[in-house]
Length: 353
Image 1 (tube, rainbow, N blue to C red):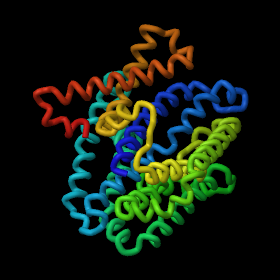
Image 2 (image 1 turned 90 degrees about the vertical axis):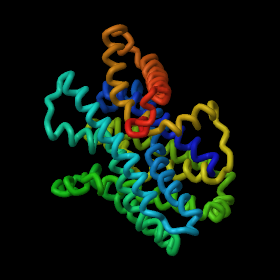
Image 3 (image 1 turned 45 degrees about the horizontal axis):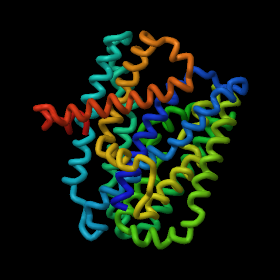
């Protein structure tokens, strides 16, 4: 799996960028049955990326457990601390950069704006911080009670999925519960099964593969089935209107969790996974954090420039998407490569992770 993990991480970050470019276009379509057909291709693309965040949580668990030599050694706090600090400084720096960019355009500098950027715009960083902190409990439990840990995490995630559906589709859902279930640490638990699963893959990969071997012939069909299921669910939510979309297409759905699970287990099952552009995708895994942190600002700047230079492009969605996506990857890759070669390259990790 050491060969497939870079491919999985690289694919996940490239899909995240694609999703965010797609949402940049989807926001112009008011949810409702009348707009379902023109929005269809972008909803399909959006659903392709629903495995990405679970993949990052899974790989975080895998690498944390990998440092224990498959569970033969205890998890050192120094390892966890290094992971935390490796996330903390770039997160704070890019929050400051993004906030200042907003203030330079049309936003007032407020404490609320800073908090929004820290915990909503860059929500993925505190999510990872939370799971790295939990690793000091999860890793020892995985060594002694792995099955119970996985079952407990699965049940907790299913409960949260039930709460997600009740909130959207049950008219009697208590509104006073919203502030509690929207709290960052609670919201982040929607991926709670994937972290111990990654830990299990790092500790017991052979056992996991032996158990999965019976599913090998049907795994591609399971991926396709759950992708179709979550897409149908997204289309239904979109057709029902703004009350149900985009929240009804959130990654908290059961169909999205199962789609992500089958994708991750496929990467765990095979020693090699051949994809087009595999070399570039794997290389993207070494720049994952840099891509993630910088893409919001780069995409916003690209949008302003394109509207000024080629305003007609914003009216041609099928062309706007590939231009924005390819341009976004090219620009960020160029920035990261230049940064690696600057005289101050020793500070690269503090800015880009």
